[in-house]
Amino acid sequence: MALSHAILSALTDRPCSGYDLAKQFDGSVGFFWHASHQQIYRELTKLEQQGLVTAEAIAQAGKPDKKIFSVTESGKTVLKNWIAQPSKGSPTKDDLLVKLFVGHLVPPATVQATLHHERAQHVATLAAYRDIESKYFLNCENLSPSARFQYITLRNGIHYETSWLAWCDETLETLATFPAGDGDNP
Image (cartoon, rainbow, N blue to C red):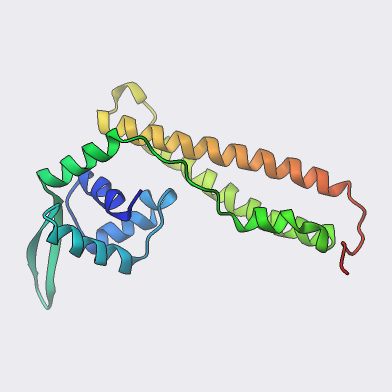
């Protein structure tokens, strides 16, 4: 997936400024697609040049004009065509897995500390997902079609975090059985 698709997707909910879009990426969209504010602004410029979004300048007192971006019909067509294409599997790029792969080089306590740190982050993410679920998705049968698809996405995140935490706990239990030596340092 290209950043352009993520931006077009985010703008289908409602038109917004680049700043508001970047905040959205820090929140909901950011749970599954990370982009810096600079990347978002650059991509918005490209999308506008391609006619996939339009920008309306809104005058502000004592500040530069604010641009509010909207998806054009061409932008919606690009999204529809993209949705219809089979997705490619994303390669796993995970520092933690590489560290575990060579974890024998350090004492088990070092790896355990790393896992505990990572675990805390995943617990916080799962709590955030559960909070979103309880605030916005209690009555699924009354949701709009777009909200139902957003809920499906949220459920994927909940399943991922729950599964990751189960794997982490299993790994910590396994590491607890290792001798407390210094690892295989040469």
